[in-house]
Length: 155
Image (cartoon, rainbow, N blue to C red; front, side, top):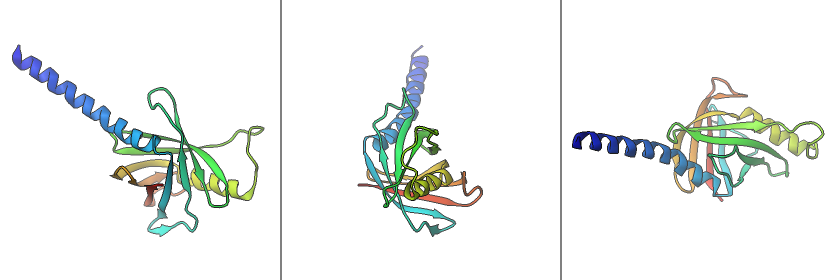
């Protein structure tokens, strides 16, 4: 009986730890507000224009978590983000604005939307510190099969 209780307690602690890694990474990201993208590269070639991300407050268990992909010219696009697999996977997904509900259709907004859509994908979490994170993927919308890296730093 004592061995069974120890096994159950150990299993419970393990499961809580796995959930906590996802929750910890999500909390670091979602509470932070604004992140500067310091690298946005494909096969080692960095994008000429680097965006920054504004992350909305979010309860990861009750809603889809949203953020804005913003460029220097003032354009922005919305994307959904999610950590999963015990915090080892990060996914971003560009959210197209429906017709009739769109923001200004200017060049800066179109560039932000195109960039957010191209870099949407499933990323492995390479680094996850309080103030810096790094993600790597070969599964993105615009660069399928190519090595994509995103590095972000808390503003």
